[in-house]
Length: 291
Length: 291
Image (cartoon, rainbow over all chains, first blue to last red):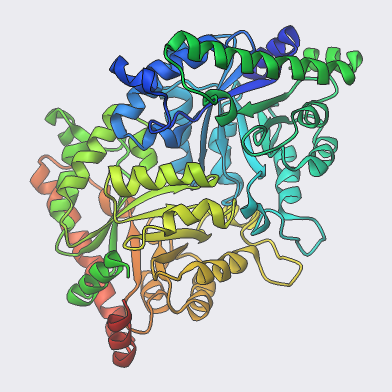
């Protein structure tokens, strides 16, 4: 039983939101007002969390932006994690995976040392490279499936000899590996044509959907096609277009208001999309019983 | 021109060795004698480096084993890097890759912040996820191709509609992306049947070959089939069977002697394998001119 899945699904239903805030906190893009605080990235993150916490169900920490600054970056990550409300899911967007004994160490790093609720992993090396993550039954493990970038054509969309694209083969395997109910996939919001088909093929997986906002995906379609029948089990990540609002800000308060406004807009749009496709209550009840 | 490739190829020819020492320094496996030093992992690594530096051409730091211990682990990684002889290639075995702006941050982390010579990356997300690494022309970028674990059957060995396995499609793409001479692949030593074919298909790529030792691959075949015509452009990684020798050690000196002996055995075995298939001198000269 994935307690993380239960936690985030409760919050999705409570807020009528699927907003995942992507803390891609690029030190070079952080507004000037934070530069005077002594810990620009940390104070920026704290400000984003204050501004979004009433709309968000999850926060996704993109590890690259912290690793790029070495030990100081990881200290910022550690303190940021402590500031994220307990009711929200924390995702390490880390895209890790390696041979078994190594993946075990990555799982320990993110699930035990840093206490993340969830992680993103890369499928290329196959089951034994992912099993050490899946073995944490209470967590959520998101396997890259169909991503929103151009390069998805190079391999993900290559067609196998049985006629399926590679990403469909990944989806099928993740379905098989989802014994503990703690498996999910990453599927880009710019792939709406496929999103609906992927959800139909994987009614029980949790979907992490990036690509809305700066990458151009439709929020409305992401909510309607990405959710399960209970209108749960999907979070939609928004990073750049939310955390780096246009304009100059002469105070942290002013910055926070702009972010808060944008978060509320996203929240309302998600609410609306959820109203347009009301949940299947029977499915919702069934899902609550089995989780 | 990849200056890293030049550096490591010079050392391969100088030592007649292709030994890459894998610093998979699992804190839980480090012999008791190091526990009293105050910095067990760091002192263990320093001991391994002292014991292997006359035989090694490269050191591979498996980031998972450091990340698992959080900030302290990364401090150990930083100090370990400072102890590796300049003549040896340092590889961040990190298996990273993400959308472009994120991969750019990973490349900054490992190439700029930590100053590694080389990195391993995962191909699933395609070219734009790898391009930020390739853009560091002086470095080496090893793309996962065919790995030594069982899970390689799940996706890597899946056959595409054109009859090729996925890993062969990855190889072909990496060949195309190798404009700066700084591209390589990871191919497991347990895949000797395929190793020869992969080298034939990619005469100009640098090969990183794990899987010798604990994973059971043949050292002799890895050297003979993995090297290019100049008997360069391949390093063979040995981790567990080298850094965790059997037996109890009552001093760091005794431990170091055991590791040193094993490193020299590997070195001699590589020398012998290189003698059995003498280099193509014309190819060697040509490769020196173009690098």
